[in-house]
Length: 290
Length: 318
Image 1 (cartoon, rainbow over the protein chains, first blue to last red):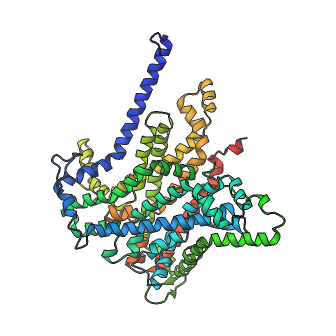
Image 2: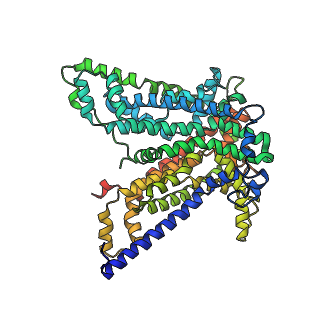
Image 3: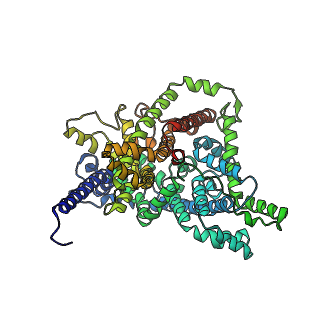
């Protein structure tokens, strides 16, 4: 732009610049409030226990490592890594189950014309709004009768049986958007449904599969009620239950380690989030589900 | 808008059902369909439909897991309605739903409006605002909240600097629920993203035309933005209120595992959990669960009924 701008253009530019500054100031102010708890927990994990509740400072005056090194002792004889391993197993199985079973079901809804499809689809959508608590007790009775409590089976069985209607719906929507010429061409080439599913639809549905996988991982990692109800030996506890145990055993006296472990427990979720946030947020917006 | 209305299942290519294939081909398609969705069918029968029937039965029985269920008719429901703790849990839950949902949606809409403007770093802001929604459900954040809102901790001390003294949050039966409300509002990212998707679809010409007509920003928001995003608003209200009815983890973790003090955070599901899994009163808990289902269904029905009055669909305008 030349220096000889007309006065009118000059003020328009200036107005745009002040608008932009005001926007950033506003956005940063909201951001500061929203991220405060996250920054606080990072700072607090380096504070001595007695300062965590009492001090108003966001960051420690003199950072200490004691809270993290204290974690090495574990919780009443169980090492922290055991909780992480259990959570990881739960999350990985959940992801495998959801991706496999939901994509098969979604393929049927999106690509196969079979009798009763609309009715079943309506039923599936209906389960989305059903409060999960009505199933909680009979499912518990069922798994208890099968002597499967205190294992991961009750926690992941539903994932392998496509009961997470969110993800089925998300994948159906996505697969319907794929060009139909592709699977028709595959059919003309003599591909059966299994082959069309595996070699054509599944690879093309990657964005929907990734979104579902990340959400499943994070939900399983954060899950609290499931493990609380089904797991009862401390060795089998997931991170969520390990944290609760920490609270019960150590209480206020060891606030430092509790906060440090809370932070460590958040790391996988935040890392996942940072790596995939673009997929996650777009997936959310297009499907309208959480 | 795909967000709100589910599109009817599209018939998959008329051409593919070639006449030569005939009835055998159709039968093969049926078989393939049912085989592909057999995981879902098994899951639906075993983990959804079956349990629903079972819990409906349990709701009319006295059942402690160890002896077979005993039919007691409507007893669970009559005791439930007279139970002061049940009444308290209904009151706490309604208060939570009514306070948390509108505030959360208001913040979500406000931030979405801010982010809908094209500015540098938009994507980063959007991601940062979304993060609490992902970690908010974890026990870790429950602990952080407890530490922040403990009596005489950061929140308490900061407000005292401004001369406001409410007498503590976590330990104060009058305020502890609002610390949970704050936790819920903090997770405004999910509805925000949905609002953003809706805002993107408002045709810019409408704003330009309104500006030419001399409509100010408030008027444009009220007469254009709000009606145009009302389907998304409806969707968010529905989803967030249903979620709020089912809050559990934060109440259990933040306000100590008894959902107190003085039952101040005894949300519905917390009482259900106590009755079912602490006191082994599976019949009573099932009756509670069905009452929740009916309440949620009623809220859903009322919202759907009300949408005729305030939700504006583009098709209707044409």
